[in-house]
Image 1 (tube, rainbow, N blue to C red):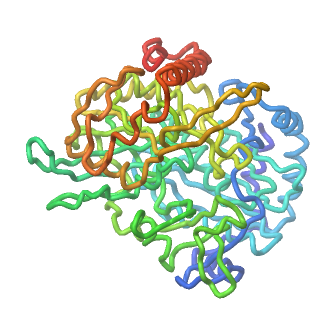
Image 2: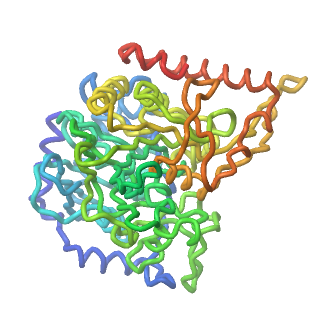
Image 3: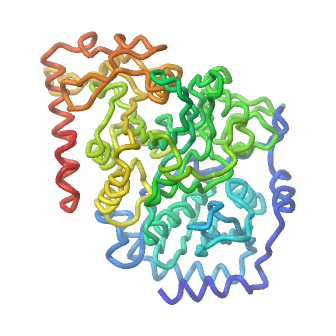
Length: 538
């Protein structure tokens, strides 16, 4: 749309736009914050989570929503009127212009320009907190993308308008940092696709682990997929007990990476936007170290008037967040990027799900099964995604709610990329949920949920990942889904999760068949998906 291009070009020269330094942004931000006992600052927002249902894509058929909701259809119908109102408002509102760069590489590092209305001066925190997640790097390969953010927009017209082909996003009526962060990263993932890369909602790290069979110290790349609140960040930032001589980890990313033909994963952020609920130093030491640094910035975390922080108090929301610097984790690698597969001993691709019935706690996948899991994107909804549906079963292609365009195209591209390196790539499904949940039909037709769930502890999943990295697990056939499962794992009482402890044989059969049927139904939505993928896990 011509009016979008014109409005963006005009903004840079308007008299009502100022471009403060990073120091000035910080000074103006902390003036409105509550200082914590750690020396950091805390802030609150009225909007507590992302609002995917209020996001629409405007442009050619290739980028439009496939099945917009009624509210999204209303938003789309009003786009011309909304743009006219926004562009008129932008000529008179006080704006700050902030520029940061995604990534630190010479393949794809978009320059992000944000125009934020500070009609409410305390809203300057949105630009500062977002800016702390990216770099100040002035050099890069671009392209430039623009985000216009008006927190004070009418609540009844709250919406996100994404124009992917114009590299422009409008965020109207939100004061939640996540909408700015993901507005830019969503656009960058679309741009990555147009440049032959693939944007992934995944963390990345390097594991240095000693092979249990050969004694050789190996350098292993790891990509960790997962929806919000499944454990993606927890295990992207965990050392997994790799503490023997020469072992260790380099934390690279926790949220978005760009996968390349050579298997490299380009990192995007130098600061992480972490959930803080239930945080414990003994369980998540690296995250706790960063969150209790004076550099941290809290959003909707409970902080009492004297500055004491309570990570367990969910009075405000169960989606408390902290912006932390990657360097404050204490385990950060020197680069944001995971190197090409050829420079590693192997690459582990792990899909983290959270299910509570018959999905194995850990399963080794073929490449075809891995792509099927990529397309299935199985988990349960969290408060960080959609609080109204928290706990419900959910499927999201790529475990990525930010895909623009045809999801099958993403799956086929993922398959194409990992097929290039079959001898060096290992794929796994890791279930951070548990076993034991059962929905029973009552005589009156009502359904009753029985949650006698034995859950996987963080330390147990860390032990499984350590065993995978050290090549210390013997894998045996799993009878229901055609995958392989561990015979045993050091540090895990694996027999605790045996299905027969929780279900009768008939219940197991029913639950397995139900899951397979759900998977078939889901995958049948994608007629252009490679046929071997559709059959892989069903």
